[in-house]
Length: 231
Image (cartoon, rainbow, N blue to C red):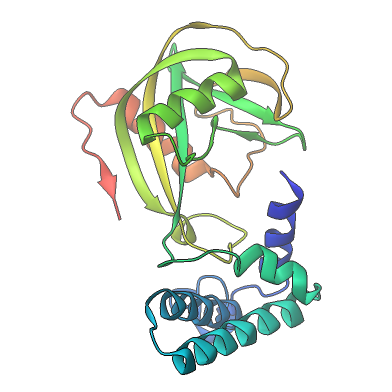
């Protein structure tokens, strides 16, 4: 996990969902964080399409307010928050994350993160990569394996499945893959790989994949007629 992602997680942890007042479904990240994110998104879109200098000034002010809300909630410097969440232009869209499900003898391959937790190999989709290409690339980088990306298992809204909540939208794409070669090589992101049975999973990197999602991958692997789940 890089320092930027750590800062994002800190924002979320300091503003947990208000389950006591029924806000989990309506505000999966917690109401204050959700409101700040929505304000930032509206302001960014306004800045992209506004033609009047007066409107530009107003949208910039709204964006500044959203950043101040996030900074106050997370106790972070305002400039750091602006660099994290107010540095893009154009209409704001969710980020894409791919996860490779690779099986051997009905066991799934997981990679061990630097913090000791385990995850499906994957990561953000690079700007010059398709979903298929990125799935193959991330599998190679994190597990050392050469794979084919065969079928999309599911496309999920991260906010509905994973904790901690993030201060931006993420579409998670789980892809059923087949190993065709390669072996683990030391790298800066993972320390080892191992195959696990469904009933003997290690401590997972819950922010990337949870037990429910791993079980979904097992179900897709076992079902030749699996139909892609999408939200």
